[in-house]
Length: 53
Image (cartoon, rainbow, N blue to C red; front, side, top):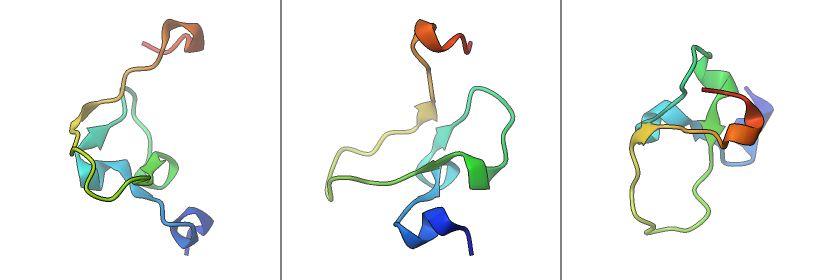
């Protein structure tokens, strides 16, 4: 089992959040920090400082 799963992380794709580049699900994970928060679904956008488009 992936260690991130032990801490409550799940593949982002399950929540409809997609990576802007090709990456396996086990490396692009998210964790809900607030129950009942507004659901999001889109392609993740990084700040320009990261140099990822």
